[in-house]
Image 1: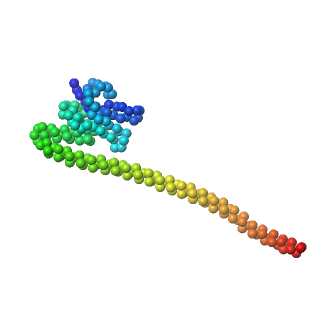
Image 2: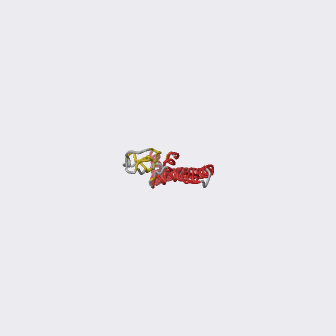
Image 3: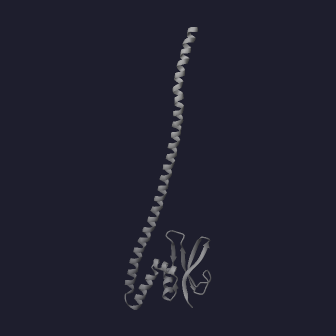
Amino acid sequence: MAVKIRLSRRGRKKMAIYDVVVADARAPRDGRFIDKLGTYNPNTDPASININNERALKWLLNGAQPTDTVKAMLSYRGVLLQKHLQIGVLKGAITQEQADEKFEAWKASKDTAITGKVDRLTQAKIDARQKAMDAETAKNQARLDAIKKREDDAKAAAAPAVTEAPAEEETPAASAEGEESQA
């Protein structure tokens, strides 16, 4: 019986979540499986990969063949490196302590890289929000300036009428002098 480590789809339309399963190669994609190793959620950034590394390593050492996607995920999580180091230990090329030391060094560097990526994505999101806020503030200020300009133009249009009014006041004053003479 050929055993594969592959993905089994679940979740709603356009929001798929996958289970990482060990299944017979002849079984349907979402059908019967032997063991569930973990989950994979490609909808998050970076994608969430939760796999039981010990059980995955056990299945790989027993001869299970991962699909291309699962192979990439196992490599990302370090399971294939563990398999490589464990084969070296079984052949006597290195000791178990050396293998564990190499794996821990790799894991520390990988965790640093993942943390750096998450921080960059978070900072990019914050910068995008700030840029959008600045653009909105500039747009609102432009609207306020346009409204103020229209109000100033309306006042300027009304101001010549006000300057004409004192000229008219002189004529009533002259007529008022005429009224005083009549009284």
